[in-house]
Image 1 (cartoon, rainbow, N blue to C red):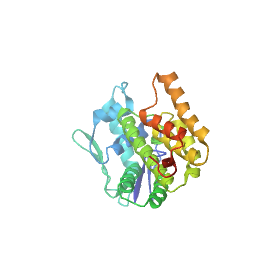
Image 2: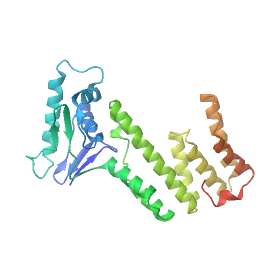
Image 3: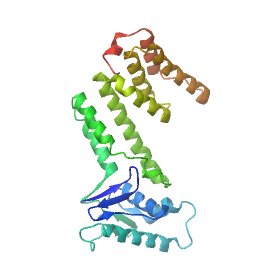
Image 4: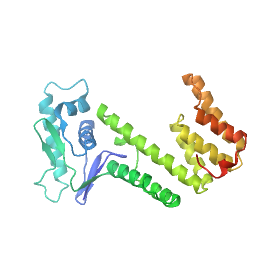
Length: 256
């Protein structure tokens, strides 16, 4: 089976070998085709992704050459090298995914299955940690990509964060609060304004008898928002601060 990758690297592999892409343009071309998930991508859209506002003078020839090169490399991974999945259409190109898998599509499908599957919290937490292993590194491997790919990356990242929030809710309901404290602290370095992560960290710290540390999580957000954005924490965040100050018993049994 041919597997395409956007999480941690842009590429593909099969039993016949691994796709090796030379240069940013080839990687961007494949990424732009993959985020369409089987739908056609116009030549103009590909040109914008690959060259932005500075396309070469002979851009039509250039894009045809890059597509041909990618088509040959993909054919080498197929059982039938005469059958291509990178098609030329009237207005552009299409990469057919039939019979292949795309790691980010699998990630999103698994998120939806777990989120809406009414699984027991312990089972859900274990399955989420398995799904998170699909996310092997930065989207597109940190490569420079165009606006369409950047928008797709933002959507994928939102799904990852939503899955992490659900994971920590499950772990709190399973009283695994000690386990998630370092994970939440690490995530808040990357996402300091994510209030849900802060709320979950406050609950976890409070359950460990660290009331002062839990309040510091709220105060840290208050200082950051005030100094950097001129804002205040949301009413929900203030509810969490008040619950910790008043030692609300519900903090020991509920994650929200």
